[in-house]
Length: 278
Length: 295
Image 1 (cartoon, one colour):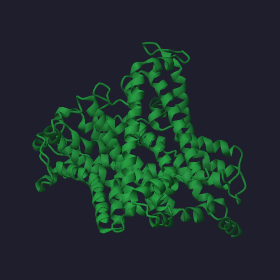
Image 2: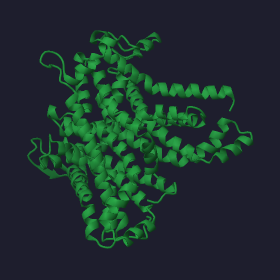
Image 3: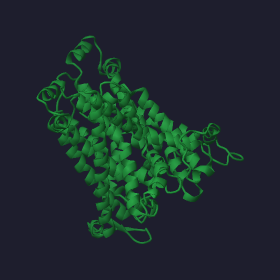
Image 4: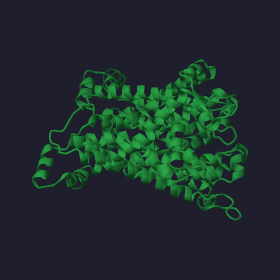
């Protein structure tokens, strides 16, 4: 590659990276501005050092007697929800993928297609009837109502099934020779050998859970059951009275956890995502 | 469908293992879907006291409603623009990142993290860029003589939600395109280079055709993304306004059903959307199978 062309490639890539980093940097700087300046449309390219306290204010509430609601309970709820969804989906799909891949039983294909059907029914297309079922179960405004309806996952099941089909027959024969039953085989051999898949899926599902908007909006009508994503949209609320610096600070706080998870587990995540679709 | 040679005997344990998944699916997927189909065939009286069977009336009404047809057209435009924009940009960036010898890991990280950005957060980011009062770009646009206010101008509102939605999806597409490019044997590209093919020619005659299965798969994923997952982005930016200019089908289902409580019409819309997703999913699996993978 000639030097000139190499330089051009780098310049364009840097431009591409800036297209994503720069706007988020502006959000960070805007959070530290005072509310008057941001409302006059003044753009900050650098953060104001004395404005950094906004993050503490937004986290723990400010104003007389905490007039502005603190966002840390929303962050905690989002975190708990994302963790529960990721862990729950992984357990449910490992078990069902194991059943489909390692056993032959009546109606196996029917079960497989029933699971597959969940792919075709995202929550956005069945908003009201799902809400009615959850209301009927008395799960409105509860943590269970937030998490349980999102636990079934065809994608995760298909991914694990694919991984399990690739487990060498010799491994299983050896395990059976050693007297390991199906349950021992799952916990002692299959799950440890699938650790990389589980890690990758954890990232994908954590991000999925953290970023949910429509379902938490429907199922949690009580302010104490608000996730950070729902809370931010409420903060934008009525245009005229929006405190934009607080909105930007809350957005930064909401952005950080899933981005950190992706960055920390990047290697497994990329491999798992692209392998999973194969 | 591929199978294992070695298996465990018995049928009680596997059914037990499948029970949680099947229960969740039946309760929160199949039952509500059946409910939506049933409600789409019924119509309630104005007081909500009783409902009677009306056959396909809700659907006939839906497909003769100019507002609904406009929303269908708008959704197609929106999905097409978001997919084209995010796929195009991701492909360019992936080809560049694949050809960069130094700093490849850095660029990859710099372009992967936006995967974690929530649709709603993408909306907040674009508010800061395009909001007529606090945005960074409208002052520059006004110097060009453009009066920018997406809260009043329908076309500008559409442009805003398209940009925000596409921005969020680029990194997902980038990950897949880069993986696709890296699986192309270097020898093929090298041979073309020896034959004197320039980079553009190499792209169109070798890389692009070899990426076709990845592209096909990503097109279906992007259409599904822009049709469904952009709900948060649109709600946070425009709530479907001004005057329904950004009301896609999912926003309309939500508005009609949850906000305006018109259950029959909303259910019929849900059923139409289900049919849409079903079609997309089947298409996606045909494309996956063409990639030579066993499902």
